[in-house]
Length: 216
Image 1: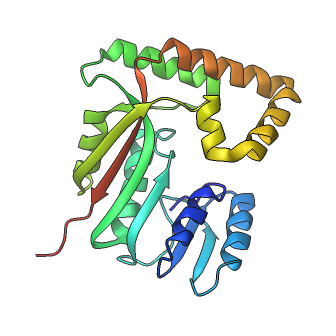
Image 2 (image 1 turned 135 degrees about the horizontal axis):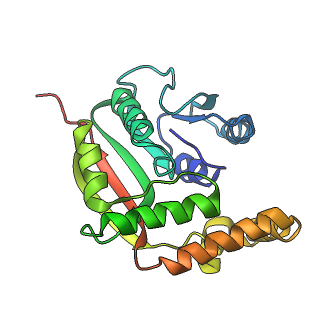
């Protein structure tokens, strides 16, 4: 559903799917993925400019929907709308794969959750609302999905080793150039890093592969 800036699309296309469609509101992203799709041979691939909660695509038209780190930044209503759209797009038995920001443990006190969410809002200037694994699971199940698989990894969004693995040397150098060349961006990144460090035990990367129930 959300193609990112190309890496995920390349990995998907390398697997030679029957077809691939990306959806993003950012025209720059749509342009990047459209050009990348045009490089492929024998795979109908495209990217449309639309909202993830209202793609305009046909129902029951996908075997797999992938959402990259987009639900965390939504309100509960926004989360539900995007999940419901993924459910609508999938054929029975199809899978929806997401990776998001999580909180741990499941028993984390509500006051600590609120404290972390407020700290994230101050540092990244977005009202991020990460959930515990149990809360993510409950949300996905309440929208009709079965949840066969989930997993967690340490939060490594601003970890240099992780960034090199994800972006490559060239990508990291571009990021560093942008950060070092803009005072406001640099302050924002440093604030994010302080927040992630302070709550390193409570914040986690979390992923789910869920399934639309097969017809019976």
